[in-house]
Amino acid sequence: MDTGNAAWLLISAALVLFMTPGLALFYGGMDRSRNVLNMIMMSFWCLITIPIMWVVIGYSLAQVPFDAAFLGGFDNAFLRGINITGEDGGMTLLTVAFLGMFAVITPALISGAVAGRMKFAAWAIFAPVWTLLVFVPVFKWIYGGWLAERGSLDFAGGTAIHVNAGIAALACVLVLGKRKGWPREGHPPHSMPLVMLGAGILWFGWFGFNAGSALGATGTAIQAFMNTFLAAAAGGLAWAVVERLRDRRFTNLGVASGAVAGLVAITPAAGYVSGMSPIYIGLAAGVVCCFAVTLKTKAGYDDALDVVGIHFAAGLLGSLLIGLFADPEFFGTETMAGLFNGGGLTLLGEQLLANVVAIVYSFVVTLLIMLALKYTIGVRVDADEEMMGLDLSEHREVAYHSDAVSGIE
Amino acid sequence: MLQLVTAVIKPFRVDEVKEALKGLGIAGITMSEVRGFGRQGGHTETYRGSEYQVDFVPKVKLEVLATDEDVQAIVDAIVGAAATGSIGDGKVWVTPVSSVVRIRTGESGAAAI
Image 1 (cartoon, rainbow over the protein chains, first blue to last red):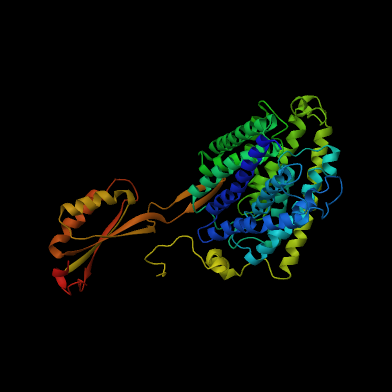
Image 2: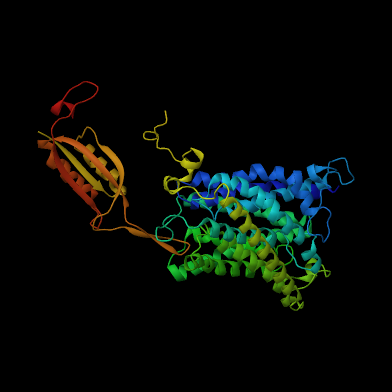
């Protein structure tokens, strides 16, 4: 076992774990004060259910054996055969943990779209079931599976995670319906400092997400680290400048959203591009997502916190931009080169195919899961519970007490 | 006769008004954070390009109990200290109070102020 690789992967895994509470704050601050705890709980529910699902069955189905089959098998279910006494000294066990962190955050990403009206019991079932039925197979096809064998690239989860969760978010809100009063009644963020803190934690954790995906302390990890650094800055800058020109102000939410858009867009490309490419990718993501978040009002789907407008849009954009910017000199000539590096359109075509497959599968299966929940336990809280706020109606908790008037002694 | 002086002012003028009233030897002020609008109207906020109209803007409400002879000086002090000259400075009004009791001692009327 290479101890340097192991050390970096251990740290990276912890960094990726930290992104989920960061996401909880990012989303929680953006929701109204009566729903903030429900929003946070949706992420924490993923933190407490997905790790168990992942080691019991998820990892084995998603990665073992590493071939072009539609789905893996049960060889490593219950962590069978994976321990620290083998030849690898525990690196496989560490990889299971590292990938498990990605399995945790992927369903949590969806929660931002369904904010403010989903029955928590429905979410409690949805999150692990979706991870098993949608995340696991798509992950299998993209990492080692048939889409990877065809030549499509996804370094740290642009298609497998962001496009996948983003299109699933759209399917969820189509079944769930709009929040009461949307879009007539505004739903502005209740705590911008929480949003900014959450965005900062996401950016910090994303170094583990992307640079950790090199699976070792290698040059590729260093390149992915630098790309992550630059794309986030470029994304935030681009969004801020568009807002200044369009709305006459730089806003905190614009800067945070743009940085996240840049991070999402560089995720699939982080280990395949170099030089100034991450800046171009980040700038493109900031501009595209700044406009993509306005589509929901025109199209009439209530994607509450813009999971489609940011994660889907930036994930797809970044994944397709690999087809332009992928640099074979840098990551090895056995993979295809992008259009700008003499590779023609082949890689772009493979990127498009991989994303279309992920989009169609994720959308259809998510729709089926949500419809099954809708016609059994129901997916939506009552109108009066929605008005009261989900913190109180679903969790019997309140985020912000004023001591004198809370009635709690 | 006792009076209640109520003032709704801009939040960032609270310290000036408090100091002015303390300068008059006022024994107590009750403050509440309130929201409202007058001629000033509200403001707009922008999040991800969507504008939200906020009609009720934050204000501070001050309440001071006073005897008839002190009322005019208190009103003048509040008006002097709260004024910025721009729209939204607020209002001061006086209402008669039929009785006041100090809870600790049971004193009533002017002795309770």
